[in-house]
Image (cartoon, rainbow, N blue to C red; front, side):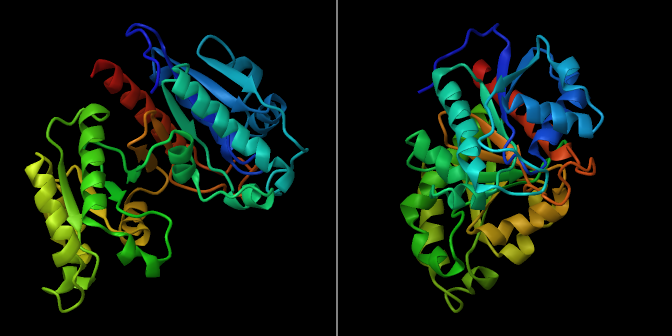
Length: 333
């Protein structure tokens, strides 16, 4: 449970700069230099190595010292080893995880109203000897949350949002991971967070099937009949407007999406390729169901672009914008 901030206190948004060899540090500098004035009443705490931030900001033409002030501060966490842009070093795996831990601890204590995470490199943390599947799973474990939901979203007046019933699983394990109770819990989390964090009074959720053509009445699989449809019936009985299951190959078109607030896809590569095709560079990742607010970019560490100034900060700006909006809605709820 997080501590409540006074309603008139400035929002404090934590930004973890992620993998030091990747684009996270420079994108953080670019995003805040370009757009911090667009978030009045919000303060930003950047978690990372101060020297690294100064160096990467300079590489993209930003004086990081000038950026520091009332609304932007750097919480210094020293690197474990010197870093070169684009060159991974497992010695910095604990550093990356330490940034995330500090942000989580601060959010749980009420110091931070939201966390925005720049991309990290899973392999660096695993190579350092720490088992790590991803941000989403780690946040769930650290906050003792039994079920979280990964949702990616675009921006704009009618943003496309895609949530996942399963996340980082091999395809062969997806069917066994889908249960009636699990899908109902997932729909409940989506409905709750869209209401309380996104300000949607009556969210409408469209749900895909698992199999081609949503199973063809059982000829191509029975998950729609035995699991997904019963889950939708139970969710509807709890006041959740969830509809389906729809064939995934025809659901992602305007005639359906124009009246939907979110799509629930059954597995990672069923819904996310469509969303990333439509929104890449401006899309975001949101973890629903946590006791804290967390948003992130929709891309990886882009090691080949680190330090070059060619990486686009659009996704990080959108992630910060969404974190600020969610934190404001949460305070007002």
